[in-house]
Image 1: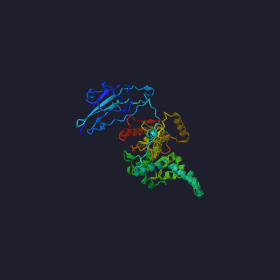
Image 2: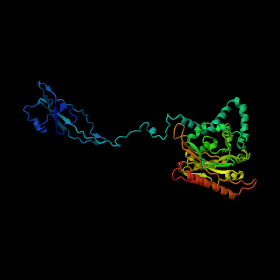
Image 3: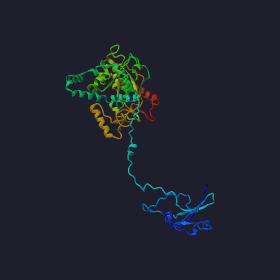
Image 4: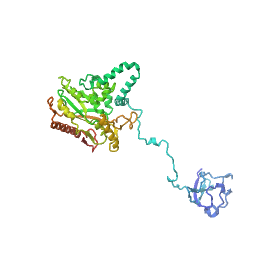
Length: 478
């Protein structure tokens, strides 16, 4: 059956309640209805004030319409503001079927104008649980990290905590009386041993230096070694490593292991990385350091290495690596800032080269200062003064630094994964002074100036290649 429907809105008095039910609607005056309603020959039947129609069987029926469900209106006042009540409209629907049956129905047409949105001042909410975790600055490592990267992290962690690990192991053995007969003479040997500065390198282990685990350590950053020219194996050399950084990871990866191929780039050169003499007084760790080819940075140790051993027994083909800036330079290891090298007054290594006849080789490590974040001296001047005081009286300092952790990328003592590119410059030729002759200060200044010039050449030539930020400068200080 096809049905046609037409709707006509009719205004009704405002006195009609908004929540009136259909059976409660009052009988409307004719002036409120369309003219076609009161022109019919027969008045439609009414039930409780509603217009109804009649079917073919002369039985009463209601027209098929669905009245929308209306919500009862609430209070006329919201937060102290009164609502303005609008007069509703009466909707008259005329329904015609195919048989000509004329049905009429009435219903209220409520205003569906969208209500104004609530402002933030109308409702105050408490904190959302878990919101602080969404805003957290700590980003945890995913579970699906490749196994090789996990091994790289493990090796760097082991190297970073190596002194603490060996020292803890020593005290654990001390807690077992069974080991006392061994530990007591061993401790005396550690205190009296001259191996760290004898220059014989008798404890050096090429096997340990060439283990594949050091490739994991170097590939963590990753670290790479680059040479500017070949070095003659018939000479002896002093490598000056810059900058110190926090822990000098680049120096260890390139000069204490074969992970970066030092012996391939510089065949015939036996290089020794130097560190503080106090490190060789730590039980168990000193044996590990000596096996890795490390030695004391004392003057006696340097001279012995460069004047003993080699094919001629006078140090030919020997080399040492000194981190020239030392602990003082570590306090200036700031990422994304100017590269400050403590070098202006550091001339002891130049005098050592003149006495031993070793050529000076500048080494610049791009990325060494990017591995850690550190408290700056400008923002914490008192902390900086305390660090300098510790350096003066104890020979080392304590940088306040942090980087990433083992399972997160923001907090911890693990270095960031930033590329390390260690560039070895051209050697600065040095004429050896006669034995017992005083070193000429003018010649020292000349060699020192040539060394700084070569260091600046490395910086200018390779800073753009190895990703140094624009505006960052190389500055020679102190």
